[in-house]
Length: 500
Ligand SMILES: *Cc1c(COP(=O)(O)O)cnc(C)c1O
Image 1 (cartoon, protein in one colour):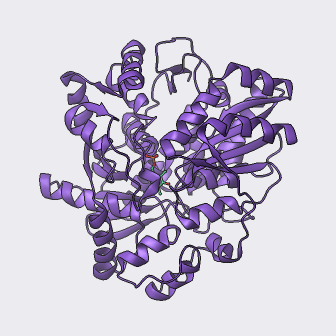
Image 2: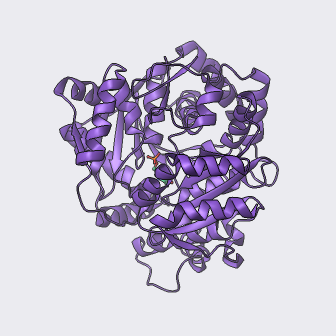
Image 3: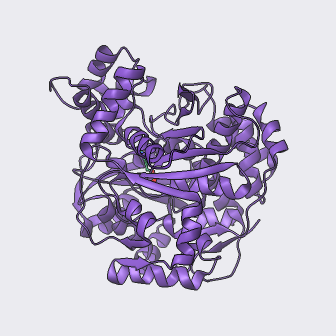
């Protein structure tokens, strides 16, 4: 199992190298040269295993240069309910049944209460092991651009991991109060958190520019550091995400909700396209999937793309109540384009050139057919997001966050449009307590106080218990108060490294 770039450089590397380097030398993203196949018999066998064993098996299919024992030990450590830094639900990624054809896959029972933990609890181990395997003697400085949830999950995953430092850049006015305090109060001796004057795309562009800055990388090299990324451009982020789609299928089979081989839908609240791409990879491995429904908020650039074949980022950017999806340039779409274009890197390269020079590209109808074979899409307005939270709570006594609400509304619209009766799984990406301000407003509660003081209030109003990792947040003290312009990001990396 080797990896190659999405942009036409056909040299192949092992998974350790793909994970250690993050981006391919030609600027493309690493993709596996083929997809391992998963038979129904194998799915049935996985059904009897706990989550960490399902994860070890599936990750092992992609990480062939790691021994089974090593992967098993990382998986066991990551998906455990014991220890300081851990999951607080023994199923790890449990399903909640709402009605006979609707289930919610809750991916937020990890230490930071959002789905990013599913990958970032295991990825730091994979990254440090990959660096050792590739003979890299330098320490690694992990740069993260976050729309709110990746930052905290990376900080938790990498904090005090020997040989690593982590710097998180978040959009100053683009994250929820809870997200912000979770990050700025982070403990650990190897971490830094910096606000950027701009939105997520600005922060992500700034980080990409730092990666391409040869002078900077030489200077860091002299101080004994190399740069790496914990964003979902890194293969080490995607492979653990394939697992929960397969695991959800196992659980539906196990509980008798489906027969082995039945095709199901997943509806995924989408931003950078990493989560839903992992579902597509599961489909390519043979998981019986009918449709993958890509749900956008008001920043509906992906919905437009799936419906028209034109990706056009020349549009206004909206700050919404689902901030982790406020993204106009979805990095991982590049990996999908590669598959859709018969793995022709020259074609993908041309799209990416168009995107950077003109801000848009168009795929031909042949490619659109393949796209629409698997994907459907829709978007959800701010009002509908709020209405969906309220209705779901009132009708089903089930509390969902703003991102999950976007997906649930889009699923309902899809059902109305197509009359598709397949069992559908809404991918639930964050605890409602992370977005308590918006959720309380949706429930019609009068405004009182702000930020973390509302965590307790949401619990009082709904009777839901506060997730364990958020209980102490009310007393947390911000440690990191720096704010920089996009042009100051590079200098802040150098300053931090020099002080270490
Ligand atoms: C990151 C995130 C998303 C978007 O996931 P992508 O992989 O970027 O598409 C959706 N919801 C929440 C809560 C997130 O943190």
